Image (tube, rainbow over all chains, first blue to last red; front, side, top):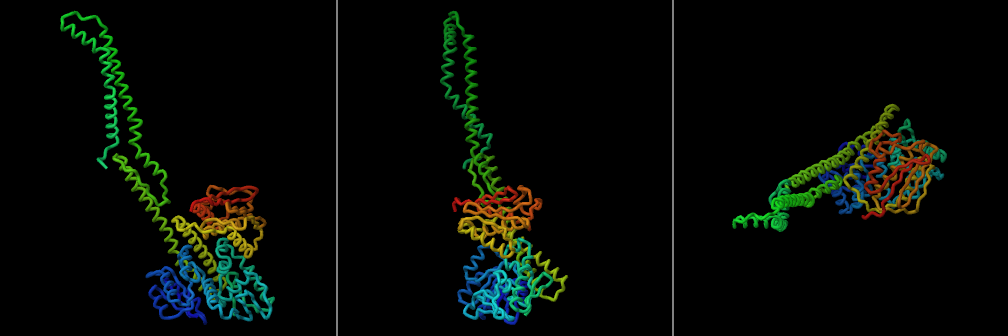
Length: 224
Length: 357
């Protein structure tokens, strides 16, 4: 999958590219408005991460350009302007998702995954991994012909870990993914442990091997 | 506008004018008086002296005395009337621009972007006063505005470095770290999150100060509350929240801000409820009330909604949640109250549904 990161802050762009780089992701970077327009004109991307505030122009112009050429790329706006108005304007102009800075890289990865899933709707909606089959439409998880009875929270947690597989995901990143602002305000990430524990128990009860690794109570990792 | 005159000058001229006018009006009176009292007898005396006759007996001396005294009295009356008129009516007339200025200054609100237009006047002092006030207010407004913009820009600019820090920490966690290092990284991660949230909240307050939110969404308050309660129950397994509300409480407001307000009030209640306590939510289209079990005493209401006030015994988290609630209420012209009864903390928001939009 080809990905274009349009972001003028080089360090941030590097981090994103670094984190997302895996066998099936190909990341390219553009650091300015013109640079981005050049790249869009030449190549085709599956997904574009777009910063709204660029030194030589507005990200919204790039977005309009993409839409004008009717490119199939999915667009996620990544912006420091988290004003409600900007978000609405961005989505109106045709962006598929909006992520306010600062964000965690696992969250970004998850958003890209969700977007790609929606874009490739006609394709296979089942995800096969490590003996698990996840029906993304029906939100059901099968393991060796057993259906797992997961709560909504556990299902989301499983997807989040699987999408960030082989990477350590901080406990607070999980908390924020699951509950949005609330976990943050509660300053209490302990609930993550309880849900991980339940998920693990259900997976092993269904005969699924141990894939979730706990790293000293601060992070979790799905190991293939 | 004609020539400028000073206030003293102007009142003096008015006074002189009044005196002259009243004196002119009183002239017939003086005439009658003079004639009636001693002019006739004086004529008699003069005539008899001319013809060499004896001066006829008369009470001339007495009449002159009485006449002079009456004249004196009359002049005093004229002057007093003139002073009263100038003091009372002319002053009022002269000071009108001053009262106008005073009224406008009293109503002046730094938050509203308006500098009042003062009535123009030909009085030197008031013109000076008005221009000085206008300049003062302009300067104040500009300072205030740039201060507000500064807060907003500063919060804004901080988002990007915060994003860089967070992303680097995410990467750092991927390294093969031991327990100690991982714990340190995670502590930094959590601190980074808190800083980011604080910054977001400051930005939110600054934006409300700058009136950057529209308030004409139809907001389904009960829907928002249900979502929040569901999150609480799914994630935190808190089942001690009871809720009494109408099905669709629609209000006119800003949706995002209303959500933030409800979220903040609920989190505030959650944080401050003891394990076996309960939370009661009551909502109609007129008001939203949330109550939670207290630890035996009322909160100090004086600084309850202030930013970063840690003096009271409430567990405030980042110290900004309730001030955001207050700011959202102010933004929509809603009233918020706190009271304590039956060992419960009550927060009540009264929606102002009759407002013209």
